Image 1 (cartoon, rainbow, N blue to C red):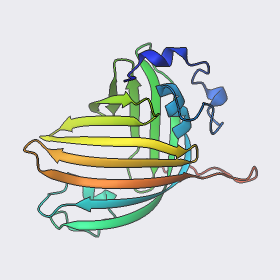
Image 2 (spheres, rainbow, N blue to C red):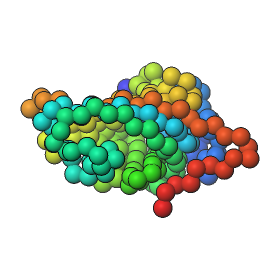
Image 3 (cartoon, one colour):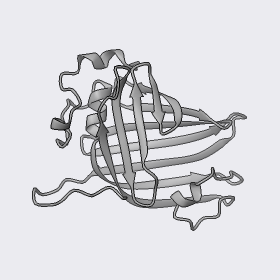
Length: 196
């Protein structure tokens, strides 16, 4: 289990001088700083979503699924998106920095990874765990439900994510799987700009 201690040996600090480089770390990442740097960049994502029958959507979910699905209907759908993950520098001695996620038609999401093993996802606190295989697990408990997300890399330019929701009474909630390919640009191409 790596929740903070191993990251102190990181040789390349998070700074604006190395932000634009796509991969700065050994593969798979050995610490949270290397993991964060490996995530930074532009990604083309394909996500499959599943919501069991009878599960009511969380507030605001309708805007994230394109608005065409009724919140109380069971569904399975796939969606494509371009996302940008920007590296955030540490803001204090108590954190490792983080990521800000930009995607069209969605509010930005900020994740700040604290040295104590907690993660602030916008205004919600959860926990993070970096496995020996370089995969990151995020756990958030809120409103009588638990959300687990696992993020891992098969290659430096192939990122995979799975998300599972479970209610306190044991019922399953939403689930998703995403495969994301890093967008590699020719030197003359301009990077994707974050939405306003």
